[in-house]
Length: 260
Image (cartoon, rainbow, N blue to C red; front, top):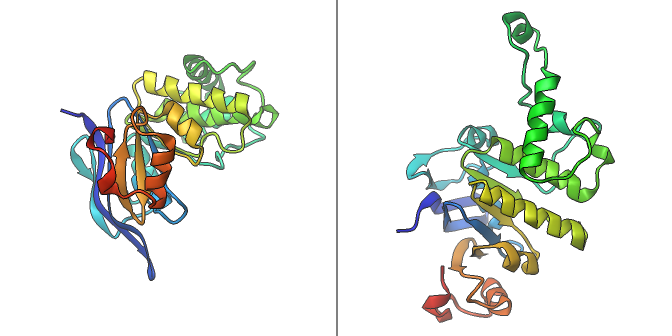
């Protein structure tokens, strides 16, 4: 029996006359990396926004560990242990790595007065940031350096580490290797694998098909607002996957053994 920990059934989202999600389904298994792919306008962004609390679907249901949940905001999703790394990273360049890791979730010093005046415990944040970065094997010289001094891949590493540090159920990553060179892109792929090895399932949205086929355990293909298929990248070729995504191959023509 497959262990589905995060699921959506029949999600519908309309923007005026445009139907972005047309009864789409979704399922994420424990301990997997699931890639979500689709052409522009396929509804993949709307799906991810619904799963991360950034959009409220018009109808349909979302389940976490088999229990129905309703996310009214990204903070709601966070409270349920779902963290999202957006394409723009949302890091504060002038702040240190440690400060970025705890941005919005700063550790306060103990004691009533410290909490009353929000006295931040920088030493504890530095210690915990170092542990998180070392746990994911992100080689950065000092947690006290400003994020603006880092390379693109290292900045992505900070954003991923922040999500992995606080996620209890799922990490969602939007185009995690976009605008990165080959070396840095591979670094981020290794980082995603380590997040999974640490026990967190990962959803990645990507246009980079070689990266998708290198890292994904399953591929969710979104087309015309619906889930067209979920395929096994070890059994279905990249060209056939793209054919399903674009509509050149019909879903019913996919051999059953290629589905996942």
